[in-house]
Length: 429
Image (cartoon, rainbow, N blue to C red; front, side, top):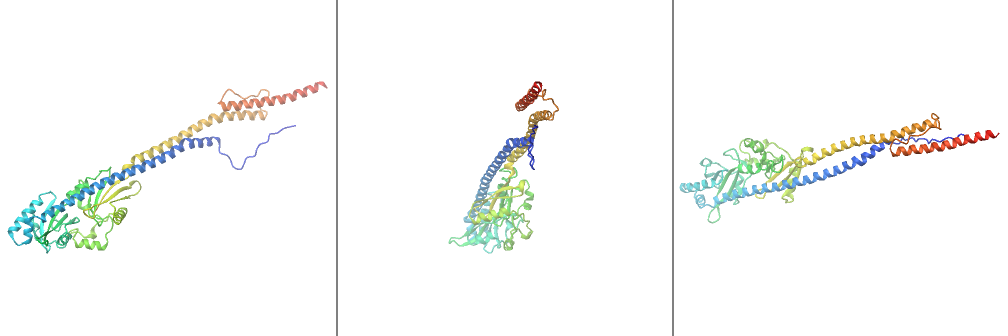
């Protein structure tokens, strides 16, 4: 009787090869954990560095805003002292007296010498005309349209927004205070014209203060830049860099600024170049509506993203803003990302090489055994002399070869036992 060995039919789908399974296993065990741990670690590091950046920006922004507040209060205090000076009060009560005018001028000259940024100290009559000043060339100028005059005339000390002087046609700050008589009535207004050098010094000091590329800007309550750190070393270009709104100015505000001659006689509000930062505008609006002191914001695309903090001032409704490119703080995380990618690439290549070497050392000997077994099965090798080499290969192939040898021994036993029985039966006949 002829026996046959059944062969299982193959399914319609083909199973992945052994090499592929080994390669996938090596990638899953060796490379995938590196990718997961690296991604989580880098993300955590990036978040921590971002938090550090915001904390540093907020601290520095608060410090600079406080310094600007102190400066404004000090200059306002100076003009209040001038308004309370006896010589100035006596002159304000008798504006036509030449002797009193000379005494008041001496007092104002002494006040103007207190700081290098002082340009002029003056007395303005209730009609809005400068009648006496530390700089005689200022006398006779009408400032009746200026907010600082109107506020002081109403009895309130005032700090103006930076405006172009109608005398010098240069940007300046104006501080004013009412000059009051013995009965408390307003006799005249004392005002100081101060250039922006000291304010610019404070803002320019923040250039690079919290990392490479960090920069500051001072905004008025309309979102117009009053000072920017980019003027550092470029004061000759300052007037081109300031007075740039972060959002378009509405018609009503533009009309008010024009009436106040905020930008002098040579420039109109319509000529201002808008350098829009919508996220900053939203942050400032939200900060004011909630009476908050700080507001965070971000702007810029992708790798050029910047993080900033807006800080409100107390002496004026101004906002100081400090921002820094986020990459300044996250550069180490970006470097780690690149290192991780390189490591994953190297790990993948190594896994492929090891997988090929490993499967070759295992598969090739097994294939030789398959070929030898096939030769036996088709009769290419005499069953009496057939054997499998058990001296080469690893432990797995040796075990397989030993199993094949045991199978051959069993086949020999049954095959030759039948032949022996047949020969014995023939002889007895």
